[in-house]
Amino acid sequence: MTSVPPAALPDGYRLAQLGDADRDLMLDMIRWGFVFEPHPEDAGHEVWKPEAGRSVGIWDERGEGAARLAAMHTSYQMRIPVPGGADLPTSGLSWVVVHPSHRRRGLARAMLGAHFNRSLERGEVLSALYAAESGIYGRYGYGPATTGIDLKVGRGATLRDVPGAADLISEIDTLDAAQHGPIVDQVHRAVTRPGWITRDTEALRDRHLLDKPSERRETERLRILIVRDQDGTPRGYALFRRQAKWSHTGSPKGAVQVREAVALDPAAARALWGTLSDLDLMSTVETGFLTPDDPLLHLLVDLRPTEQTLADAVWLRLLDVPAALASRAYAAPVDVVLDISDTMLASNEGRWHLRGDAEGAEVSRTEEPAHLALDVADLAEVYLGGTQLAALAGAGRVRELEPGRLHSTSTGFGWPVAPGMSWGF
Ligand SMILES: CC(=O)SCCNC(=O)CCNC(=O)[C@H](O)C(C)(C)COP(=O)(O)OP(=O)(O)OC[C@H]1O[C@@H](n2cnc3c(N)ncnc32)[C@H](O)[C@@H]1OP(=O)(O)O
Image (cartoon, rainbow, N blue to C red; front, top):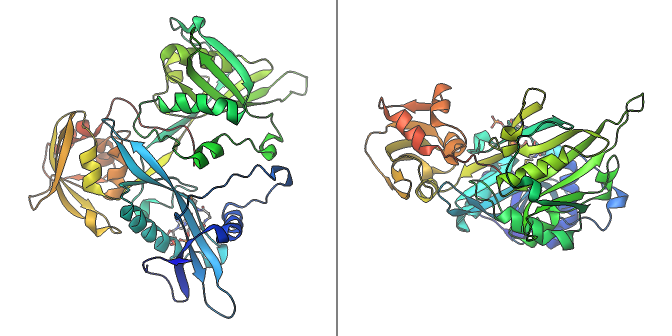
């Protein structure tokens, strides 16, 4: 156990980096936190590979005997593209668990403080996560920066024609990580969208293509649909499973469960969704999280029969506010003083003068009067352009201190392509 700089912890607890020797304890903690038992049939399929030096635990040293692990988290090294195309170093926070015996005494807060300091020391400007419950992370300065829409589309839903779609070649196969991994990676990487986190390490790529036997119980194994152009170049893919169901009168009611669907052009999107929505014996396609501007929403002739569920997707934390603001481009010129409150990272607190446009931006500390005031979590929510500053102002979460500044700044923070990503970590 390597010691980590002290954090505010209740007496008798100690924060420390976790390593390979702690792996079994970490896996046990993860089962406590996320409530599951290992399935015997998954033996040999587990590829949980925490990245070296990025896991931290809290040990309970009260009482007699050896210290017991009371809490843990890990993080992954990632890069997030932001509006304008810059790729920012990001710490992908994951597997945050406090054992039920130790909850609600500040262990999570202490771990988050350590996570912020350690990420900043590594030069990470942002932290990103998927929240198990949406009430947890706002208090630590994270905001839901991307939104996902899950659609349930009926079999044979009419899609608009796209020139060239009929010329593409669609092939369906059983997913084989070694064979299809490079194709998935190549297409996934070619997407240009704020928030689109690439899977840059082997551990992230392996985990993403994992097809655990226990997950096939009610369904089939993971399949892949690849759409290629006439030259054989992949233009899109979908990872999916089919689940067979039958009505009491013997009619097929199966569901296609899409894990991830990526298309690089309109024709590929049309070919992909056309195939997925017309598989034999299936009556519905469950799309999984799509970005709010996904082509499927605009290919469908009639949206009314589809069931839609909107939910928060990636939560973002600006660890270094000036670096984050200076790294993105702005859809319209902005020249504004923002007064930021941040209860956990004092280095972000206070007034920042931001001047930016489509080419880039500069940010400096200032004593000038502020035009807009907001919390760092609300800044995170608008940072990738998915939520309007003006919308948050409508809910009283952004204060306009100089009349007339809100709308121009809100336009500048917007972006024509919705932020999003297609996989969870
Ligand atoms: C990125 C990810 O890994 S998401 C996964 C998060 N982990 C889980 O959901 C696993 C099960 N839950 C847990 O392990 C724990 O309950 C945790 C990690 C969510 C919270 O740990 P704790 O040590 O109890 O949190 P801590 O004592 O620091 O509480 C911080 C604050 O958050 C609040 N809080 C904690 N969990 C929740 C929740 N699920 N919903 C709403 N508020 C919460 C606490 O009430 C407290 O509020 P306060 O500051 O106003 O007093």
